[in-house]
Length: 576
Image (cartoon, rainbow, N blue to C red):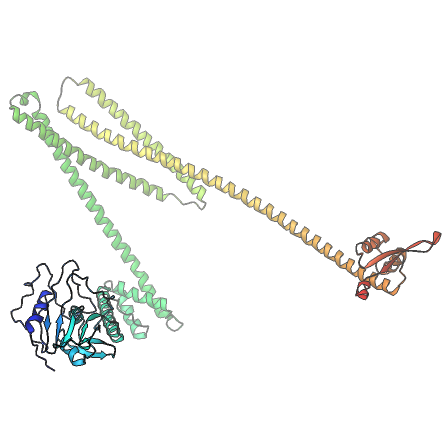
């Protein structure tokens, strides 16, 4: 369906104000050389509502910048713009995926051809639902076309040149909520969610580490092959993993128990090989340590020679012949050499101290382990004391040597010679060794105090636990005795209550048979046939406790006056 526009320039101008490329009904551009950056209103951001969006609402126009609307001439009608001073027409919130608009204010004589002529230039129309009350719903093919249709909201429409009221109206375009639009939008969102889940799954699969190869189940053929692999040193690790899996699966039974035993035996034979490899590596490590220590000692000796050269150069015989700058350089080089020498010397002494500590640890490990924790703690404390004594003796020997060196140095103080330098070196070595021994001695003392504190704490905890156990036993015995007493009291009270109830029943029956009552002696004589332990005072107390059931009356005159007890439990029932 093609409807040529009577005046396409006005429509093109109005669309150009929004930065839209003007399109005709046939889909061809009305202005081939259209530039969206060249609009009539400066500052309007160009937009492209023709591009289909995936459920995304295009950016609305800025409310601060007014848009100039001009007259639009169509074939059968004319659209007059609203007053620019009026506020923009109100619209509802845009539903998701909206492609349908509500158009109100149509002329009474409007038809679908007129609606197609006006709104068909906005984009492809898929359906028009016109009502008899001057409004309709238009569904477009794309979401961006809805914004073009909203641009026409507020225009006054007039059919031809008629002035009849039925041929004029004011358009009101607004978003409409349609189930088809919502369904398509939800389908599109689900599709995007599926794509996102698929992308995440592919990424997780890509980043997931590869699964280990599956392990075959037990069979005679696989067992024979696994036995050969276990004997091979290169394939031993993989074969042991398969054997472990078979054992965990429960593949062992009486038929193949011998095969599994042979494979386990073959695995055990590798222990000697592994221990040999470990000892070889330890030997290589020790050799490397010795080489390093020897090389470090050689380097230290060369440093000592360099320091001796600087000391010889600093003597007065050679020192006076150097210039001031040379003396400064020699002094700086000597200090640097001494610092480097001292650093390497400390490193070598540290290696020796570590070896001594390892030897002492080996000695501690060689001591026999005691069965009881307290005995083992005592033996360790004694070993620490012995080591402390030996270290103290060594420390005294080092101190004596230091004193001797100081005395010799005091005697030869006026004359500085090469012997003084060697004595100073030995003195520094001895001082460093003395400091190391002192640190080790302090450390051993702290360990000894800590072990003694632990032993004392363990003994106190043991005594406290014994006291708690004794208290718990006493409390349990008291609780058992209290429970037994309560049970006996409850049993006695229950039996007494039952006996009293039986007596009440017997007395009630006895007095009911004697309507003129009976004396307390007569009642007691009757009850004593059943229970010989009962006495008249107990019977009288029982009758007095129940005044509603038993009543005492006086009968006779003068000397024959007698107290009798009657049963009155049924008198209240007879009176009612």
